[in-house]
Length: 513
Image 1 (cartoon, rainbow, N blue to C red):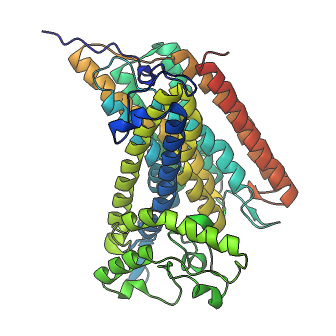
Image 2: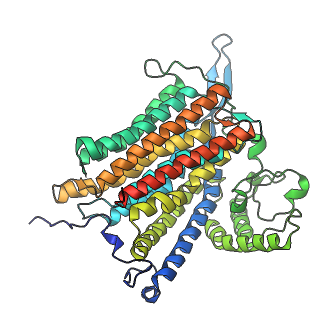
């Protein structure tokens, strides 16, 4: 007997509720009593919860980035024999190179909130012939947020007059090609090859393209013949993050954008919530002592800086730290990054990110139900911006602390590729495989025309963004930084492109245009 699939469209979860209407949404987050509240109050409370989850994503990004730094700096001992003297030469060789670290650890890790959200949405949608709406919408919105607002932030991060350029143009061009191809491929699937449906083979090919990206970028980095571009590589620092700026960081201070330098010794004693200080060699401490210190730091409010003379600012800072305290206490359970070269902390950080992504998914469903706002609109805007926050933080840190612009910009282009090849490919593979085995049917895409239009808008605006980066390289000699005026002009232009994408895409999926 053949099972009958659920003929439920991806956005049927929205209900008919309106924030101003009398129709009640029967969905709730924790307690059934929530349904007794007015829609306006419920929407306000759920949006507050969503914002608090985004703060949690920001906090866990600090531990994620610190563990990633420890993984990348790991080296191995290599013994070579000098052919002339027949003597052994022992040297340390990095396990990770720039290209693989940026595409896998950095891009995949910072995109994990979106990947988790899309995968959770796909698992919840198993048994339906229609794909879920949150996953693709969030990933497309996240791609736009990565490309425009994050570039807008990174271009003004360097100090006035300081220029930071991409040192390996060849690798960046490879990453850029696969990023553009990802969205061209998605358009081919939705509008050309098999309109409005996705087959299991299309989903499988989408996932496999991530492996092709890795191989191609590695080949370009190693300058393999025949498949690499004949472009020279500029000078790059030996370490992924220079030691002089990596030695001092603030892990849990989201208020100060996660990481910052400590300029003087007097400032280093103002905080009891800085686990990475210059004068402390944490590697000499026992693992349990390190873990204990994490909990002590989480439970201790940071002492007030002498620079905050205003009483209102001091009160606001105390309130902010109190707001962060539950997240800091929860994330203190992440093992210290010194264990196993940071791998355990890296994996645990991703697990916490997945948990927050699940809560975000539930909140978004309820917000759509309560307000009546199209799920794609929420995905393009609030959800995409919130889940892309780790991308923003990571690129900002890289733009601040690295001597080149490679990782800051590579994180943007590679994250966009990961969003499609992994973030959409894996959820579609899950749903298409189930539908193929159970019903012998492909996966249908609700509002495929709207997604196709969104892809065209994104492609058009992204050409404008990349063109500006090329012009800056030709005129100023670097993609990031430069004269303050032109840096801010570039930043404003990027934000304008993002607004164009959000407005046009939202109007299209809502049926206005």
